[in-house]
Amino acid sequence: MEKKIRVGILGLGIMGHRMLTYMPKEPRLEVVAAWDISPAECDRAKAAFPWLNIAVDASALISSAEVDLVYIGVPPKYHVAYAEACVAAGKAIFCEKPLSVSLDEGKKLVEMTQQSNIFNAVNLSLASAGAVGILQQELATGVFGAPQSAEISLQFSMWPREWQNNAAWLKYREDGGFTREVTTHFLYLCGKFFGPGSIKSKTVHYPENQKLCETQLDAELVFGDVPVSLKSKAAENLEDLISFTVNSTSKTFTLQDFYFGHLQTDGVKIPLFSDKGDVAEQARQAQLANLCDQYYMGEKLLPSFADAFSVQCLVEGLLEE
Image 1: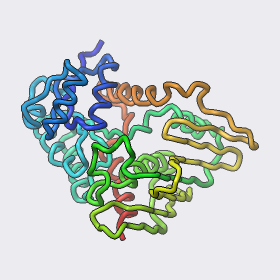
Image 2 (image 1 turned 45 degrees about the horizontal axis):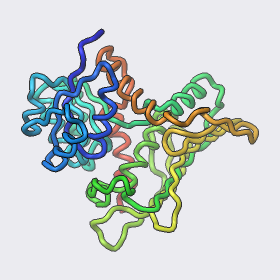
Image 3 (image 1 turned 60 degrees about the horizontal axis):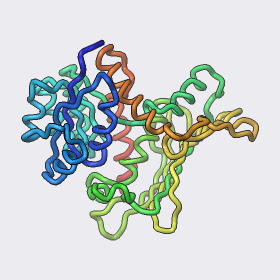
């Protein structure tokens, strides 16, 4: 068996805790250190994971000879500073999305990882989802038929969602919002399946308080030659909905709540999975397995910084007033 990849985790919020839950289940990963700018978050993580080693600071974690790969799970406006430090230290990088909120910084991240040839991957989690693999196989074999159109439909009864209360930055226009946090995943899928994307038209609404993030964003985009409709909104009177649909002349693929969904042919819906119980967990674990495979074998399995930057360009274009 290959030598374990020793991981340092930067950021102990929601995603940091998720990594601390799933990384120990991947036999080729070993979490050797973690750190958060908030002492309270460090204490909370240590209480939940007593085996965890809390580093003195970010610099000590990144420069440690015991760390091979750094997971960057901090708010996106801090990604570039930590990624720069990782490149300088020669450490592999597994970064949260969005890549950045500044296009200049996003471009800088791509350039420095390409020039240094540092291992880099972005945690666009649907990349390894079983449902996405099903559609990819259907498209590759021609069984699905030629895609004719796609729709992204997102509704939130509150933003940030209740389970994101600890991540207050998500409600601010500076680096939060549901377009960066959720729409990003589906724009990535459209690029993966159909080709490069462009914005044809869009309408974005912001609240009176200009510090707060968008409340509604509707757009028409084209990926390759496939038109994609985006409708997204956050309001108290809405039911939560996360849906991605791809239509061909003979079939319809629908992805719901990220990991579940169905294929429909001639009006007959066939669920993608017979057992929904652990589909989300399987997808998250598959993402880490692909991370390890890519690290050891070099085959590109996860989105790169360059892939994430292409999505970031679309996202920031959509958010412009």
